[in-house]
Structures are given as structure tokens and as C-alpha cells.
Length: 244
Image 1 (spheres, rainbow, N blue to C red):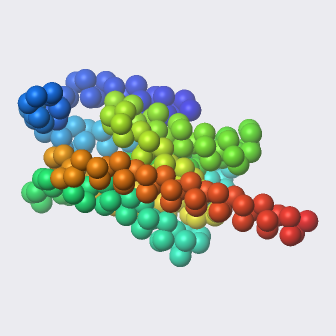
Image 2 (cartoon, one colour):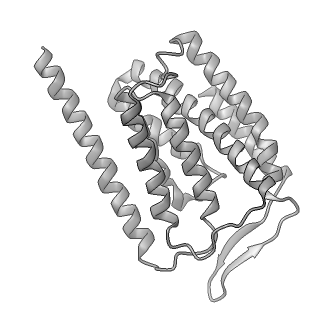
């Protein structure tokens, strides 16, 4: 938690020092872009430094207390990992499928986006599905670890993401935590997370073409993730009962 708080404080400072443009919804006017003094890729490149430091600290903490294998840094369960990563990407695609203006980025910005997406994914998966998940699991068991790590993952995105994005962030965190609980290696979760982040950014420009679609997409995500959570936890309980 100290690592996460230190990162949040650093991000707050960097965001205040390097403001970028913002998209604002103004009643009666529509969507208005407010330009800022810095391009997004400049701030994102600067943010990669605290992200890498956070990743290194989380990795060291996990190795010190549990070992890399125990915090999930392996590539076990590749089939489930690939399926789970594809589902996370599909959630993002369902959200941006009907946006009006996907980004058309030059090559150097695509390279920045690709590198930053991998760094963000490695940092957040190691911290939340690795160290924090293990800590909560040791403290209060799997249920607290699953829901608690997902809740902290959503709160962690304060300032970086608007509040209306938190439900989807929470759901994605819960789904990734279930996969981690099922033995999926962080290598697969990092891959899915990085691809999802890149696609989310590339496709997030402009409002949805259909006002009803974002609500329907959220409802579908809730149904899939909660349904999978209930199935996975029930299957685990049945397996334990059979073995005992």
C-alpha cells in the first residue's frame, strides 16, 4: 500500500506540472476540446519513470515476502491466460466500438503508447494482482483478496480516470484477480492489460454513436464478470469438498 500511495503522490505532482489537453462536456454546447501546453505523449513518457520505479519496488516487495513464483510471476495456465486476456481486450473493444473519432497517431506516438502500455500493465499487475492480492489473501482470505484488490485498483485510478470509468475498472480488476486466483501467471495478465490499455486510448476519442450503447456494454460486462466469478468460486468450493 505504501508503494501505491507513493506512486499516487508522484502522479499528482507530474499531472499538475505537465497539464495536457482535456475533453469537456458542456451542456448546450456539446463536447469541447481544451488544449493544454503539453502533448499527452510528453507527460506519458515522464510518467514511465515512476511507473518503472513502482514496478521495481512491487517486484522486490513480492520477492522478499513470498517469492516471485508465489506472487504470480510465471506463465502458468497459458490457455486460460490467453482466453482471459482476450476477454479483457473484448471488453475494451465493446466500449470503444461505436466511438466517433478513433485516434490517428503518428509512428513515434504509437511507439510511446506501446511502451507505456506495457510498463503500466507490468506495474499494475505486479502491484495489485501480485503483492496486494497476496497480502489481502494472507490477511483475510481469498474473498477479501478478490474484491479488495479490485476496489483498490479502481481507487488507484483517481485523477488518471474519471469517476464514471471506475465501475469498468473495478470489474476488470475483479476479473483479473479471479484469473490470478485460478493460477494464471501475471505474464498473461500483463499482455492482456497492455493490449487493452493501448486499444482504449486509441479508440476513446469522441462520444458513442449510440447513446444507449455504453449502458448496454457495461451491463454485458457486469453479467459476464459476475457470472464468471460465481462459477469460478463455486467450482473451487466443489473441488475442495470432493478432495476432503
